[in-house]
Length: 470
Length: 102
Image 1: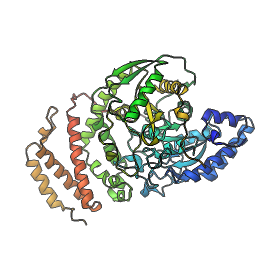
Image 2 (image 1 turned 90 degrees about the vertical axis):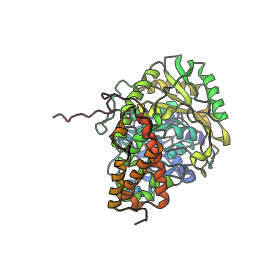
Image 3 (image 1 turned 135 degrees about the horizontal axis):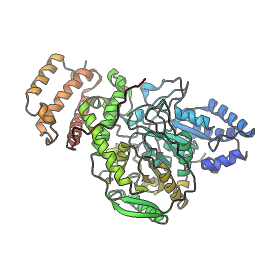
Image 4 (image 1 turned 30 degrees about the vertical axis):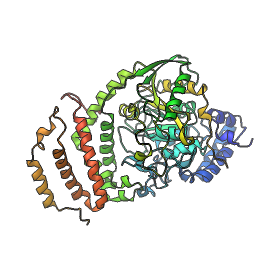
């Protein structure tokens, strides 16, 4: 069976059916993705390293195992990419940053090891905003590989800091990818690139082997074609890891694509779409109309008014300045690409210890207040972003002045370690995708995935393909 | 070394002057303290800038130094907003230290 574009854009479950029934081979599927990585990877600013030789070996191994009846599960033989902040033994892991271009680790990140165990085929290390954006970048050109471009319109950003996973997944350069989020780095590129992106609960996925920007905020999560794909990938990578003391026990984890609980109790955060671009607002309202078919909707849910921005900003600055102290003090941060990143580590290094601790004390209050609110709902929803993606040639703060606003759902959820999933829900200005985010209390991924999956059964925005062709 | 670098003696003099200024002492950290007036904030930024110059001045251009200064100003506003959030003595930070048991 020929590897058509339909197969490249198929879900993991569909690809797994083709692979298991030997209608296609992992080698053929891998070669087809490698061809697209070569063709579009640089154009999209989405790729750092193509893993051609090792990928073909892994694919051959997967085919051999499946042929012999040794089937590892839904990811067996499925090609994927990782944000280039995950260590891969013997291959450069650049963190998107010039000073680390030659960095090579002697071990694999836990996530990479788990996906290998699941039989998935690593085809590429994907581009990212340098150092995951910790030094305050203010435009898309913030990686040594250049700006990540959304395949929906190459003049616009794919989102960050998981810019490569967003663009590569949207353009079918990989079947799925792994991104990371400290405060918005999965939800934003998922929205701007038109893919489904899950930010897991803090500690759900081991960070061992991942670049640290903020030890108390960093999370790794899947970026895929659908919520169901995200669930399949998350199931493979979650779990306690002695090499990451923050990991939580997921022993009771039991994902089923056919949830039994409906209707879901879903709240709309008050003011969440009020200041958004008109198309974002309209798409959100249309999504709510779809959700009403299987959800009890509560309108105008008040979001607690707490200092989310100052707390997350102080934590990222203090922890990031410590994590990259060597870089900052050596003066090598001047080698970073974005103008702000060249100096951002210096004021971050001036955060007082008492201010950091104050932020970490307020964080407890935020976590408690949000959990009390979220306990009343299966999910609270909002537009993933108030605008479509930013143009490549403008600073972010000059792209859509005065547009946006709404409750600061992204920093709040990250402070509290809560999960969220963004899925596509339409298009806005310049043919750019928009997204809706489902957010929940810590540990509620299964419920969020079930609601997002039900939404995707009732809509087809996640099946749209960007205007790229070979 | 760029012209914005400073020597340790100048730095010490400026810090001493700052310590003598009103609102810059320990009273500034009272929990119910209102946000600092602009002049106190400017003095604090200036003191922090002196530290930046001593520690990192060699790595920064004049233009970048101005950006650092603006960032420090924003940072102080952020810190002031944080301090307005009421906390009790018993409110612990959001992490737990554990002793390494044998």
